[in-house]
Image (cartoon, rainbow, N blue to C red; front, top):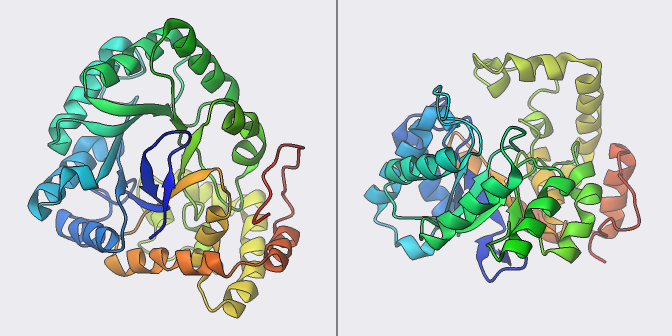
Length: 333
């Protein structure tokens, strides 16, 4: 396993990490989840990602139980939660000081830990002043409930605003953002956020490297029974796949298959390895419903070492979605 600094901090996270979204409590039970986490840990993963919204909090309960049963040393782990959707009550959602503090306390109880290493604002809250949110997140750090705080799916403007408020008030600024990033979704990471890497040292813990499974190739010939897009509650993903845009994306995946075959890897491994080429990505969050999938995902590290400039240019020709811009990163250069 390779370890990268999280933005401009001294914290090191595994280049590939493990997240529980969709799977824990929705697709798999605690025994299967434990097998997946053990496979990730044995491969050197130290960052395990979670959120209060995942399976209504059950995902955090499962992860907490697994960690306790495993007896892993807490200092060897980097754990996260994300705060925004905590329940149905009028103050159980959003980024008010009340929900940030109470939501984090509840998450710590479910995870059976005194602190999380990372706490994220799961989405921007248009109803709460950013200053209130910044003060509350900084309070969590001062109280030892979290070590670093960041955002998820915020715009560059919102992140910069939060950072400037923190600087002005001598509070802890946001360190990291958790955006979607993959071959088919890349503009925000490669273009919009580009100035923030330099100006504030923003780190990235990116999610959905396989675009909800599209980049695995398993949907090339239809939607398999039992797959994520076959699950109740994920009809929106299925509709997106069946749209003209989704079908165009599938055609690109089919064209990537020969490249994966040449590299003797799966399309999924190629997609994850591609994400690892971005030097601004601190860690790529992977998910799995079986330990064999974890092992397959971890093998993407070796694939990343075999990606040449020529192969990357070939991939760019197929994707045809380069965001451009003078501050865009350059792979392997």
